[in-house]
Image (cartoon, rainbow, N blue to C red; front, side, top):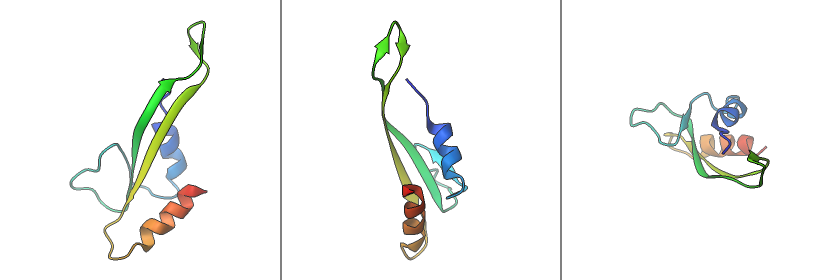
Length: 80
């Protein structure tokens, strides 16, 4: 199993400075991106060494403004 949350957090920092793992805190400051690991399992294992992994990660962008503009802007930046 490979843990990528820290690597993804580093890639997302230029888009949003507040990044949380899994769940949004009840007192969170916005905007915030949450990282949820959906699937993380070994793919190909040869002689006890993992060579490939099957990893699915969900990113949610949260904002408390009255418009969708902030979330849409961050989503476009994350897509790149």
